[in-house]
Image 1 (cartoon, rainbow, N blue to C red):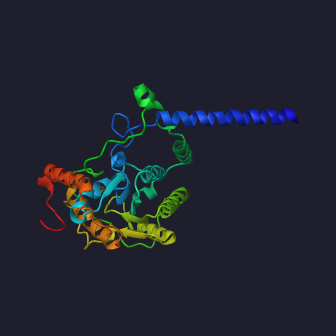
Image 2 (cartoon, helix red, strand yellow):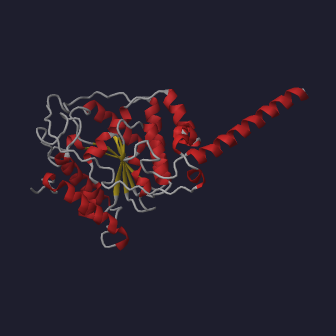
Image 3 (spheres, rainbow, N blue to C red):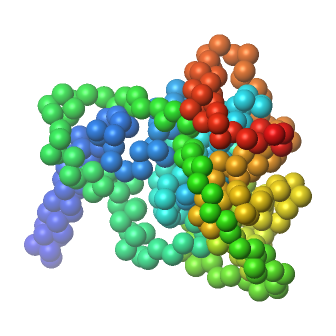
Length: 326
């Protein structure tokens, strides 16, 4: 009996030492900065880590629909609210959760907006287990960093310095018209939301609630990605979660998307012209929540005005629509 207890104790001790070593090596291997040289994973989304702490009011999470549709610097121009597109191509909800944890470690946004296309993106149990392990042990994600590491990098503290100039937005001017055939045709059907995806949305909602942030579900305009059965499922999910849901695909008058002009890839994503219209609406929506205050007169936010001026200089010839006025 004593021999069995001894073997068990040794096994537990070995496992404990292994976890300590794994945790210690994770702290060494994880990036100490969010520059391209150190951070190879979704540099645009992780640019938010370089923003000064507790300066971002609103964070938009989701896939490429977000960084194609929301222009944070235009929201700053109109309302003085700070926002960021914390989005990435093909973003899964497990990655959204990881990003949210990283963001809330440095920011305390009042509003979190989740674009709903990711809620229908499938991921399997392997993804789930790997994500959980990466959260606790970053070495599993950044194990290949040793190739470029220096002794100074190993010993230096975390100091994020890269700030994405357009606050996560990806400018696109291409025009490729979309067909509206069958787009948002009335239906009583419900698109399937996988159980694991429901679980993650619930986790995201609980996390926001615990940190005092208002969660909003949002569907950006897309003839390729959206239909009434998806709307019905998200509307029911939002009701069950007790959160607001904004489906821009139904707001034809409020957001007058011209599908012959405002999409860059046949209805999948917005171009700059469509993004201007979407941003106009979401800016007004955020203002109506009454949760945000303008920082325009605060000298510590001057960098946002500087970033806006640079943005307007870069894309002046394409900024045709300015809050509904040509």
